[in-house]
Image 1 (cartoon, rainbow, N blue to C red):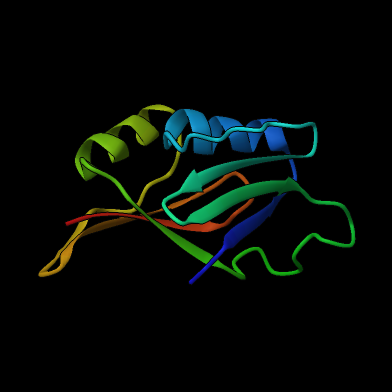
Image 2 (image 1 turned 120 degrees about the vertical axis):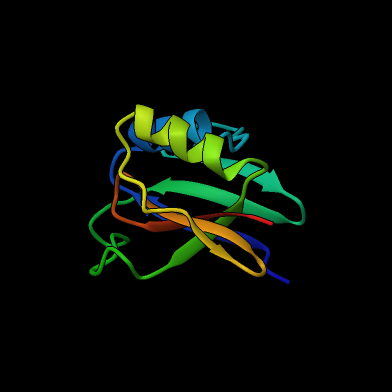
Length: 111
């Protein structure tokens, strides 16, 4: 079981606007250098990166998030200026890829 997913970000406020305000992740315990949310049995955490924790390659991790209404989520993100990939429909569900402010590739999917 995955206990915690950490994303090291360069601007915590900008990342809060993306993950909390646009994607609706209920980030709590917001501190000056980190914020976390309990997502089922896994904690999702944003931590402000310093020089020692900043990834060398921006796409070293991929996170996929399930959304109830993919079309509405993509429309909301595009309206906020976020570049979203086309919605791809597969037998298992639909997917769109977006990039967060630090360049992490985020997959949004619905079944």
